[in-house]
Length: 165
Image 1 (cartoon, one colour):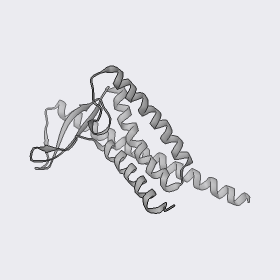
Image 2: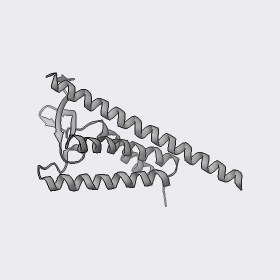
Image 3: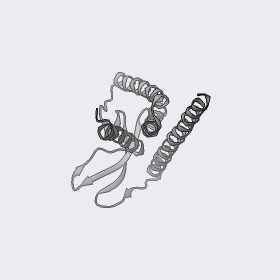
Image 4: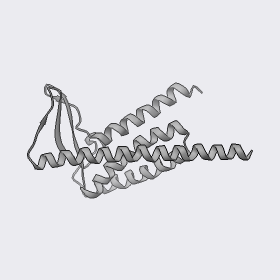
């Protein structure tokens, strides 16, 4: 029985270490890309990639993909407070989840921390990835948004495919 408990603790801590690593990787990658784009804008550099993709810096006071962007101070602080609650809840979920879910929640947490960092220090989130076809432009987004969206899609897909209750 003691061996089983030790084995369970070993896998728990291994999952936490992997989760912290993924969260930190996503956060650092997000910070690096945003800092690079901000510095490029300061130097008046533009990034035309091709006919479908540009890097165009936009400051977002809302949530992912520019949703709920408003100049009203109360909305900004309410959204920031809700995001902090979500971050705390994600930490709880990572502790309680199985190994696979820990990794997927870590993708979401890393992106959420990246955007939350910007909200605290810049009072807005720098979005810069502009995907478009002719005059139709998708919402401008950033690396953190990609990881948040990917993590959520994978979590939902995992539940739909593997939880056939």
